[in-house]
Length: 622
Image (cartoon, rainbow, N blue to C red; front, top):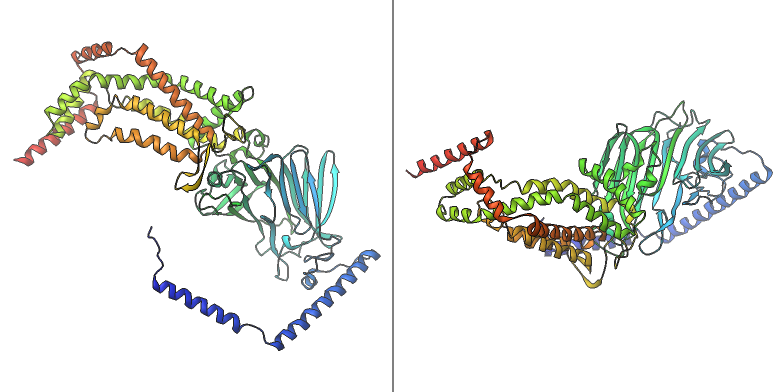
């Protein structure tokens, strides 16, 4: 990317623009006569508004119906006490509280929408209650046209609330009325101990009032409130997720601005790492236009929001009336909680990883860790899980180390070949492969065990960011295993590293350095082969990358890598000392050399290609 610099032309341009703006400001100042006219007009509006208030109070006191049709509604749209933009309603400005043991919701009469959603059992990193909605960070409304082609949005209407009980459930009905028999209703039903709230949108008597031939859009937007210590880490897992009718799960980019239009959507999740807001439907949204905008550019303790989410969903009328059966979910992205709502499969809002990696994370590591943490401290559960995983992979480690031991035994012969054909890379490669074939050794046999471990490593890499069980659980000096640990705060910020020092990444980096010293030390001769990477460079680069990359990651992940590499070192030392015997390996290789080796098709093809290349090289020199 080209760096933008401020040259003299840019400076002149900014000065000119600034001068023009000042000129326009003073040119548009009203004259004394215009000011007097504005004051008179304002006094007239205030008098008319006061008269409307007095008349509305009279109507309410005398209990006389005074219906106002939709044509008259615009004239009184600014009156916010008893008259709303949609028509007559006895609702005044105010709100109604819905709450149970886990969730607190505040629903405003204006718009009939939720203006506050608070988790009762969770707090942020700085001990503030977790809010998903607060201080106008969210908006919900239905945008529609009237029969005379005027556009209204329900977020601007005033609803009349009525709070009742249905068994143990709380039911809040909010009606925006044209008159007593014609209204638009929002109905919320909250169950005890539930994060899922039933939400119904219906109307009565609006057939012909609402123009069904014009688009009717359900609009929902939300700015994600910051909850975690590292806003960049939280933002990495803050994204729009959605579930399609065919069971497919997809998401908008978490790393950049993104926009998509989808079809047949079952639910839309505005996920904020460990908490989420979900809008679900019982009959699928035919289409949904989604937008995600990133609000975080760098790590900053003052940042209050992570992303801006928007959803626009076209809906249709049934018999000229509104009829939408929906659900709101405001709660944690905890698989134990989400899996209760199997009707919608809400647990899919947690991204466990792609393909087999996600399957291992979801169905192996997540339940396994839940089992361990049910009777062990959370940090100890990580240690125990790591030990068991490494023991389960020890046969693979043995295969890898055996391959390295064989390569070590062959090192003198490989060195001899390198010296003999140092000026002929093609011949050197041919003779080396011939030696491997006679000895029954494959240089790739050490790579295959490592590749077999990749699904495990990646699944665990995704496990720690998705494990709600680790949130705000402490271990040793780490206050929160789902966030970074801190042993020292820096007075400045280092690019790609941060403004703090985490100890677990340092320990993990030291462990991986010793592990790589142990493993690459035996295969260092491989770097002399053409096309092979510089193993010494990799040995130093990997720990350094881990030190920088994991400094802002979950401390639980760094703890896992530290323990994992530590255990692997001990396993390999035990294999070297007590299991493998290099003399026996050498004797076996010598026996293999005496046996006739039959080439498979691949080996034969490779040998023929190398011989042809050698012949062509010789012909070119003639």
